[in-house]
Length: 623
Image (tube, rainbow, N blue to C red):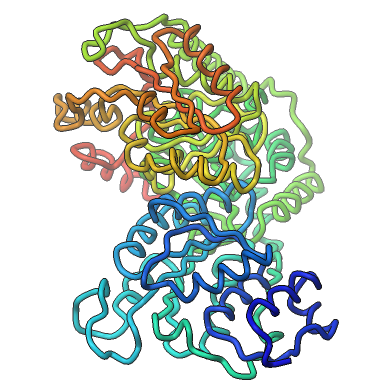
């Protein structure tokens, strides 16, 4: 049995439904002579990883051959794309939207570095993704093409280790340790992240004799941890009892806890404020939902953050734009911080850290409050009245912008829609047709997360961790893997960072809509420059691009002009929705000094010439 071929092994595993099943059934001997490349594919298969996205090169030919055989057997699927950064974004989106772990595969050198750059999104958003990179040979026979041309051992390993867990297959039998480390990094219950596996070109084809298939690590079953210190809940309860204005602020770690958060808010008469990427956890229509808060947050959300004397944080990192570089809590005396990571839980001074799974700990806190006399309030307190008035003002502020027919734009020499109007139109259409909204970085993102009105989780994803331009269009490839219908919201600059989705979508059968909101300007940065220094600098160009024509140049892609009015835009959206594949809509939007062209800024941020004042305020608070 040890002399069977790779093709026969793949067939046995397919027919029996798994590696262990094939061994138990007698189709496979437990001990096999296999290459490191095949051991890698089998190891990932045992962990439930069967999708690979990337580009092959001379640094990954042997792994590619193993994948070819296993794909022919129907056990894996490889999506060959045209840019490694796009591969990284697609794998990250798959993890975030579905929970499925995929592997990004590249050659050595530039390809690996481009995927590594894209992995910033995975790292920032806690998304477990495998990265398999070719690497220089271990015999040091001379410089390998595309290695880092410097002295020292394992230079790529040192570089990639800065971003996350990394492992080099320095000798063939280290594959077991590598698979175990990767399973832990990408499959953890919380704080998933990228795992970088460096596969030297001479190690990939090395033969592992009498390799024990059952030694391949399985996907770990992570324990769910809960806070066990009773005094923590007692301290939190006493902080709540003496507080008058309580605000609950949400991060992505609060996902799945909507019921508990609403119950807690009712017991404590608390406002609820989302982070930019955690909307939908609480339905937008809920009375206590004060919408998004932060440096580009809403009028209502930021007011509730500023006025709170007690803050309850659930599942969040204190990213600069999430809490206005630490200055949003202007009146906070205490902070109760629910987080599974001790460092994040204790980020602020005067914190009560509640460590462990948020859902379990929120239920325990609610039980503690109820046992000690807390009961639901009717929402008639001065605090509730004040926060409801602020939300009414915010809704009025938004309506004023949505009712604006258009503004004359100097670049377009036409009256065109403002970005809030165009974004609101697209969001409403996406929600009515059950599209998953994917926001790219820049002004589209900053206005977008103030506009969305999600009633449930999973309706929107916006990468505010790394704000990676080109993420949204690349993420459309997810539709080829899952059948989901995505709508990517892109600025013209972001789309040109990763336009190869036009080809990749057709190649792999992806469907969805990409809307390019074209203001011929980096409006978010231009606005920041004007706000800080009174003048924009190098944030626009003079080159007109017909993105609809560009899209139509790829056979199978529908390219549409979105028009200058909402009626024309809706007509284009309907045509795009009827198209069975990828559709691209090019929409001109206004860019200029009229303040009605954006959703405004209600928070601070430690950037540019604001730094001195923001830092001074941060130190004044001492949080």
